[in-house]
Image (cartoon, rainbow, N blue to C red; front, top):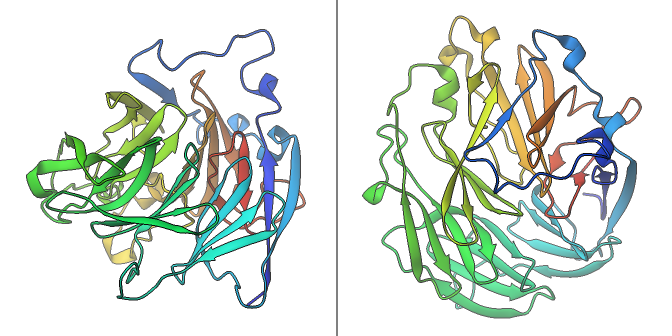
Length: 357
């Protein structure tokens, strides 16, 4: 295992004229409801494809400098704030670096004793309060950005979220589990909003159009996902194409995503490189017309998606404030003409795509 990991940062925010033009004011998400984005028909018109490298203004490489006693394993999550880089790896350890890649601390309390966690479902980086939340089951383990433990909170609800993300300085959104065959969760709740004390402030019921979808595309979307954007937390519900934003005022606002001529919610919003693979025995006969697997990522200003169709990689950059979209080919293996990138990670930092080549 290498002691130093190399990541790249691709700057998108510095070139607004490529997205909405210098003379066009930025559109607020609060003006048009529901929010709607349309994906260009790149399959019907290959000229709709754009090289992502032509959008990026700069590409910077940062070495994550780790001591021999704190090597980074396979990365599951990476988040970047104005001053820090956070990496959650396969050992359930959270590494904290400054923005230059210098090692700050490592959080690992794996175990079954007081203040220890037997595993992790994920991390919640609260950039407003410089607060790290590591959640497992009904418990959330809070630390400051230096790795000092603050408290352990129990979420006061009958079941626990499988993933969570921060909403405001003291509120979090948790995505609840569902039964894989029935599409039913306890009390039909898809998301809960809870505070740092574990009190549940609000519950959102979910809507299931078909509990056992026949089409493969719907079937692979049986999982729910959520991620943080500037306006709140974007949620994709399990078993259907319902996508919405939970805003800071706890209100639920529809967010409609259209691609390939249909309303489809991306299967994955998480800040991880994980993907879903469907076995050939489960694939329909007309598999070439379906999205086999894909990954999607949210940025404060742009929506970045990667997926595979008919054994070819595609991706898109959506300027969701102005509801414009750009399709990009060969995203995973060729963000630029001469550099081979690894899987992209999301970052809460404006306009940056982070990669681990």
